[in-house]
Image (cartoon, rainbow, N blue to C red; front, side, top):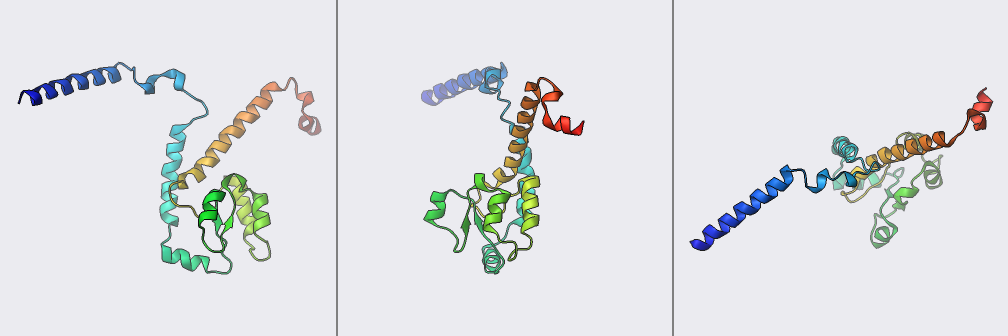
Length: 178
């Protein structure tokens, strides 16, 4: 009985200390030195929620997937790592790593005559960084998040270039536009 009472008191004291530390703002989440402008967790969380809605609409059963891949016009792109692809992949799947999935790479993989929708696919890829591939669940949200991250990096790069220009005369595009 005394042991139980002592354990309860110790647990209460530890709980009060932890609560006091969190309340005083000494927890790791309030440390401003950890702030990183390259990390936009709120943006990522928003993208995950948006992708979850799309994912639910586009999910197919195993039977539906088998019917779809048996369509002679179907192409299955496997965006997993080369190692995972080599271990096991869907018969007939084409491997293309996610970082290499560009409109140009798709143009090499998907002939226009056989797949008339390829040009539309490339336009979508260029506009929204959409990815068509199958992957074993856990990385689905990364596809849409990549678009967000790429846009952020591109805008930062453009701003940095604009800041380093000393005058508009050095910009050949501005000279052409007059």
